[in-house]
Length: 311
Image 1 (cartoon, rainbow, N blue to C red):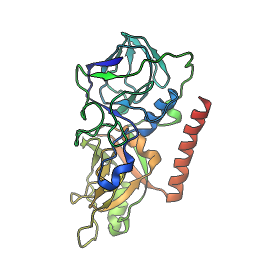
Image 2 (tube, rainbow, N blue to C red):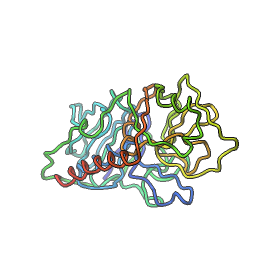
Image 3 (tube, rainbow, N blue to C red):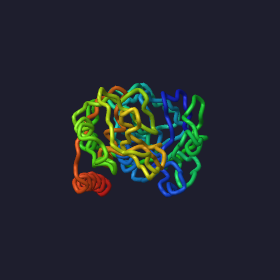
Image 4 (cartoon, rainbow, N blue to C red):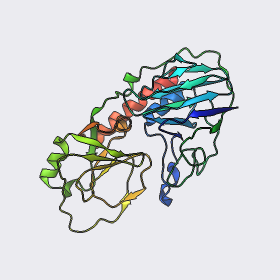
């Protein structure tokens, strides 16, 4: 009972919600870049934290060797099932021998192919997520390749006549405004740099991956710190300013500690928007209070809870 990879796409890996419980030992979390799209796919299959296929920019071609049910979420990859367009954001019944083709993303960067009961790869430190630099998790600790055979569990279905509208959850765009709270070193940056950070339209450089996004602009952000910082904890969405003066946003495969000054922190509710950006996308930042960030996040979680209760 398997899925055979006919074409792997540009960069496809196995991901779940990540290995959060080992950060004190320096273990990278990994997990889905767009956790919102990933979770919706799980909820539509009435399951949680099962291993999905995360696809990036150009999707894979897969052959299903067993009956199952899938949901495709995230960016629009114009999926075809046996050469017939198939919908996203809703359960799809798959018959043994069916071939799923995903094209290049027309808007957004990442998609998720959720399978009923999940991809049956071994867990490592409490997660099936792939972390390439350590070669752990996922399918042999690497991106999918042509000819890979992914174990799954056969599944049938009686009724799956429901769907969600993605625009109700995550607006995907190549020009976004990202909400942030001030970082621990915000006050150490010059007033000019603070103003530039909030007024500049940054571009996502081509040097962007699951570990971090490097931004580029004509601005050079500077601080008044007289000595190097002691490395301390960082998280998904931490914005650091290295000596180049250009921001780096830490993403799903980030390290657990960092020593660059932290100018801001992306609020958790906006991380999915960030994950869907293609290279050369435009990013602006606005500051919100911690209380506002918490309220925005709670509203997002309430939406997911309503979806779960409806299903």
